[in-house]
Length: 64
Image (cartoon, rainbow, N blue to C red; front, side, top):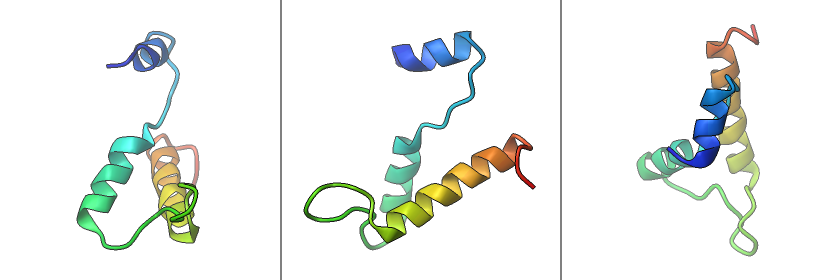
């Protein structure tokens, strides 16, 4: 765990680490989630990340 992870856990703060989820997604799917010229998410990247965030909030029973 990183210092940030430890801080969140110690202070009972919910968080979502997108990096492992994005790596897993890219390992199992074709195409890029990033623009070639600047490294920001493209349209597909935003769609995938928004779904990941929604799923986390849904598991926390925050969204219906």
